[in-house]
Amino acid sequence: MKKMKLIKSILGLSIPALMVAGCEVGVRGPGGEAVVSTAPPPAVVAPYGEVYADAAPPAPYDEPVVGVAPGAGYVWIGGSWIWGGNRWNWERGRWERPPHAGARWVPHHYEYRNGRHVFHRGGWR
Image (cartoon, rainbow, N blue to C red; front, side):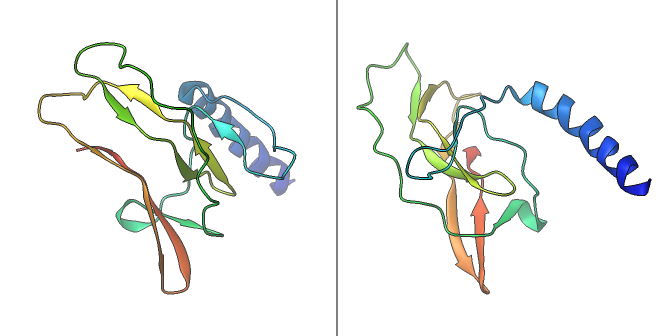
């Protein structure tokens, strides 16, 4: 009975979060590579904005050549692996406008520290 309440609680919190996140669901490729998505899935965050991953990220995808910016002031943000709580997901490269003057994009990055894989989410700073 307690297990069922826990499952209902998790689903009750997860479904609205997924609807707000605007995720694109995909499947694993023929080589077993991780899901490709356009929006980062929710992740369990450790202290200091770090996310602990179970494994190192796969090799980066070779994305198509970056085209022309869709307008003045846009910045190209390259694709990157992000940790989605239980697997690595590829976030495609995209054009974005900085949220304010002087903002700069800090890429996602990873490190291996104290025997753990640690993912640091990038963003506008």
